[in-house]
Structures are given as structure tokens and as C-alpha cells.
Image 1: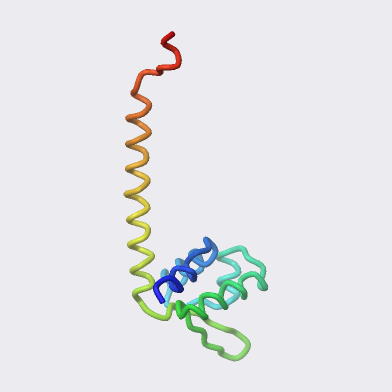
Image 2 (image 1 turned 90 degrees about the vertical axis):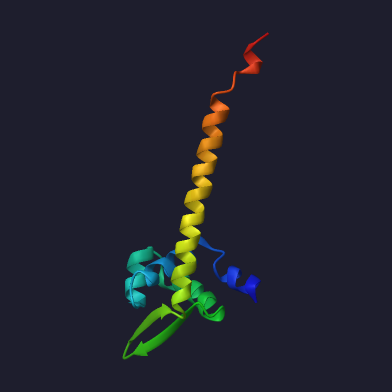
Length: 109
């Protein structure tokens, strides 16, 4: 089940959709198209994956469909992931900086 959860998160567009939904109580398909820049058909495919993995739920009102996160913990998960990525980037930058300080052994002949 955990692997399936991460399959739902395994595409940058789906993560972007979840980020948009985490920032609002809900969003219409029209709003999601504007916020993601996707064509309706591509957005629909990604939303289907997110629904299949129980990350989002939808609600039809007249001719509009609105989406929201299935659980508030999805927003928490995204926040933790952002924090972890920031730490990883910081560590990588430190490693690059320390490598740059090493002498170039290829030039010493």
C-alpha cells in the first residue's frame, strides 16, 4: 500500500497538483488548468491517478468539478518532503564547495 501511495506521487505534475490543492481548501478543474498549464486531457489523466491512489476526492457542482485533498496529512507529507529536499540540497552544496577547495591533481604534472 505504501508503494502505491508513492506511485501516486511519482510524477512532478501530480505533485504540483497536490501542492495547489494543499494551498487551498479546494480547486476547480478550471483553476487547476490555469495553475498547472496543462491541457484538460492531461490534467484529467493525472487526476485519475491521484483519485485511484486516494490522494484526492472530487465533487461535482452543476457543470464544475472541484478537487480537494483526501486527507490533510497529504499536505503534511508534501511539507516534510520540501524540508527533506532543502536539507539534501544544502548537503550537496556543502559537498560541492568542499570538493572545489581540493587541489586539482590533474594539473600537477
